Length: 97
Image (cartoon, rainbow, N blue to C red):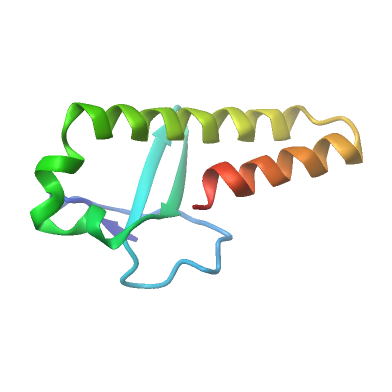
């Protein structure tokens, strides 16, 4: 479960055991799926919100979310063990910061 900066609460299931209660996380929504990943604590600090909500940071976050979503799509398209191994590694690198 995650409390958004706007006060709303959502639940996201994840296999990422390294995420702990109290960690600062980003929840990225894409279509019918979502990704949750740990990020720098400064991202969640109230003092950082003007920076986090600025166009440059928002653009970067959107790019990272799109890269993660594309990596997950490639994983679903994998036909061989080698393709799956590569795709899983890309997901781990791009989605599990």
